[in-house]
Structure formats: structure tokens, C-alpha cells
Length: 190
Figure (cartoon, rainbow, N blue to C red):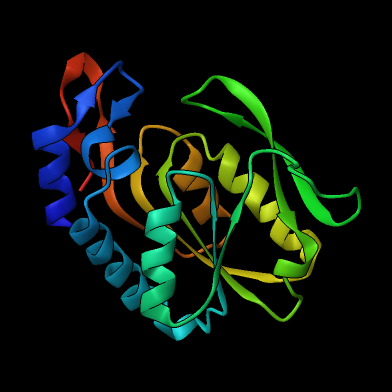
């Protein structure tokens, strides 16, 4: 998606060879027009997959998942990063490491929000090693629902996450694929 790539070049800040900050337009400050465009792109790609629910993980994926769900006319749910006030047994939980934050957290989804009849589209802002996506996939599998695709705003193609999803046979649309951030230079894979 050329508009996303342009914003990454103009406003992205390379913090290390593995970390790109897009705080000004994607995951701290949010550009609604860009987010809406992303939602349209994901909806267009996955419209024929029978998506019944969009899934993301709090917090940076929420805006993109909302825009995608709105375009598809389906609800969305986000996995929380803690148990909140839920009783044991009322939620699915999975431990996931965060590459960027350098911590391990629990992601949880109330069982009532995922049905065995659901066709789930997973949406996220970044994929690096794919740990968060793997955690979400495990929850979807335990719920009996079917993961029909994954939409990723920015894929770090130099890390294994996106490739791993593709190897599992999951259709993946990444709107921008980074080949490298080495030496502070942003290079795209496409």
C-alpha cells in the first residue's frame, strides 16, 4: 500500500536494526484516513472468505481491526493483555512474548465472544517473530472457530512471523513489508 509506505518513509523512526517507530500515525497517534484506507484494503482482500468476526490484540491493532470490521459489516473483538475482572473458565488465555516490549503477557478473550461457527480474520499493526499471532491462533483453535486469514499493516519480512503464518497455510496480506532496518535505513521487500 503506497500511502502507508510513504508515511513510513516520511515519519517512521528506526530505533534499532529490529525496531521501527510509527507512533505519529499508526500506534500512538492515529491517522483516521490512513486507518480507513487500510480497513478497505483488508476488507477487499478477505471479503470472499466468509469472515464473521475480526480479531486483534490490544492496543495498536484496535483501530485497524475496527476499520476492517466496519468495511466487512461484522463485529470485532480484541484480546486483552490481562485477565481484567473475568472468572477462571470464562475466557481463553495464552501467554505471549512481546518482541518490542521485551516482556511476556497473557492475552485473554471472553469465551462468549468466539463461536465455533466463526470465520476469524486476524488483524495487527506489526508482525515480527509472530508470537502474538501464534497466541491468537491458539485461542481461535481452542474456541473451535476457523482462522481464514491475517491482515498485517507492517511485516518485518526479515523476521520469521509472516513466513510462519504462510507456512501454516494462512492467507496473509501485509500492506508494507520491510526487508531491512539495518543502519537506520528503511528498505521495503516489495
